[in-house]
Length: 254
Image (cartoon, rainbow, N blue to C red; front, top):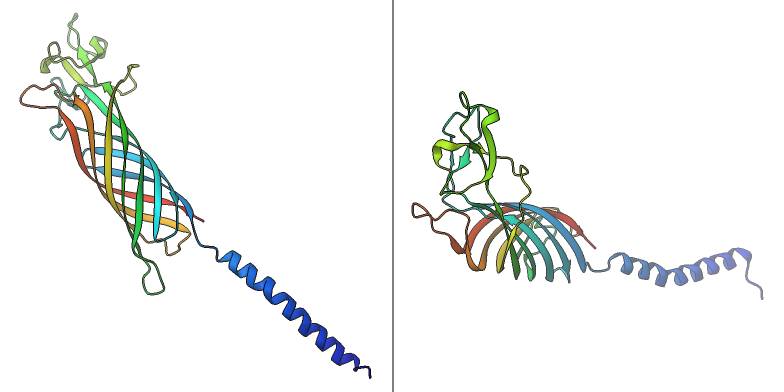
């Protein structure tokens, strides 16, 4: 007995639905693949300067391995801007007693864990992490505009750009700070290491994006004392620099 045409069409549709179910389930599973990779870039300000960083993240949400690189400036806590001897119209404020700028390049590897995971009731993701690795310190001279006696009163023509030398450049001879790009210094390199702990407060409201404030504390340590200041007037130079930081990170995860 041959079934009526309408019943045949109905049976075909039922068969197609059953055949499509595995495909639909597979596609949904593919879309909901767990996040295991990501990157983030950021800027941070510390009580010793400022810096930039980039991180590559590998692993599930709960715990991730972090590969990162950080470039930041380190200042001495005794640095203070003062007015030049002539006037602020002729020169810029500068740090008296400062010998060098000091930058730190810091590749690192670490671990990052979720403390409070984002969900329908909690729209903020809280993470904690720690990173450590070698550091390379770069010292570049601190250049000043120096007055050289000539005929007449001090003018712009009497200025010379020179690296600060406490034995030669007294307060009365300094016009002010020169531009960082006024000369082409050859940096001195100092080897060391760094360690950093931090907390990320991520408010992106999506596990696939990163928009977070970063609260951190880091320590840079080197094989010898870093000559940032002259050492005069009890301005002692150090091998270890500890700083607190506040920054902002943004990135993607997939």
